[in-house]
Length: 377
Image 1: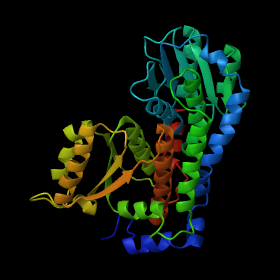
Image 2 (image 1 turned 180 degrees about the vertical axis):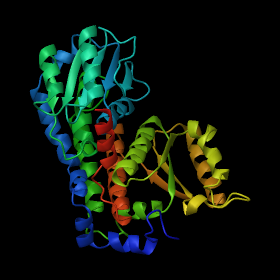
Image 3 (image 1 turned 90 degrees about the vertical axis):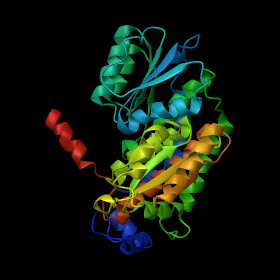
Image 4 (image 1 turned 180 degrees about the horizontal axis):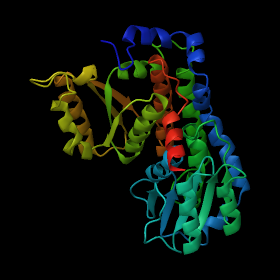
């Protein structure tokens, strides 16, 4: 492979990932340790949920809809909830990534405001609007925060979350309270055994992806090296896998400072697939890879995918390979959607951190987001 996006060649990138001391030095913010905390987040958050009286938000009957308000690494908790409950959920689940609730949201609906810091301005705005409209409300976020104050004023349950370091590393601490609420409403089908299976999946992947494990047996490092120097196009084969694809793209953005395109089958077959014949596809007739940064297709395969999507997934991989586009296939494993999502997200999180390290990039800082906030303050 030619030199990648930072001028680091693939051989040097591989050498970096097989040197545990170099990995530790390249990760001063401890992002790998934050990722490794995922299983502990599930167990500690279940305890916090049991202590905070969520029944006040649930009420005597099911809400018409559950509206999750959150941004960035906190907001994806709403997508996780919808994916775990599945398309057959009798209650509509909507995620709001912004300042305002949809006009139809009212007293028959449950709003769950999620903010790791508890001070995200968009989420505070949506939570305050929910109070004004008389919605049922629950809040998840940092203790002793403005969001906690909103919950106290509204007499709404509040689940305090201990941040793993960055919001994007606290996915399970932020998501589990939502799944617990859905479970109590009979929507998620998650009990103690399911939560423990998800935690066990996180622990299993963490062991496989530990820094001292060499890249030829470490799936996180191997995936990072497959992506190195390529533009990832990531497709999920179901709504559950689609959330994993979105998570993958976001983690590439934040951990590796890396661009990515996320999609979900079958929709991606109606638009994104055409890029296989564009300037970023090295095998397309009459074209060359743009800027030495060719496409790589990543397909996340869910055993719960529609049978016709299975055919689309397989045909898509064949079309990509025929055009010289590399393909990475990532199977989801487990009986319950939460377990399947946990295992694949943990692999994704490790791979994106390792990709940043391989390229000589500190995975933790998000300087441009801080700069943006200063400009609009």
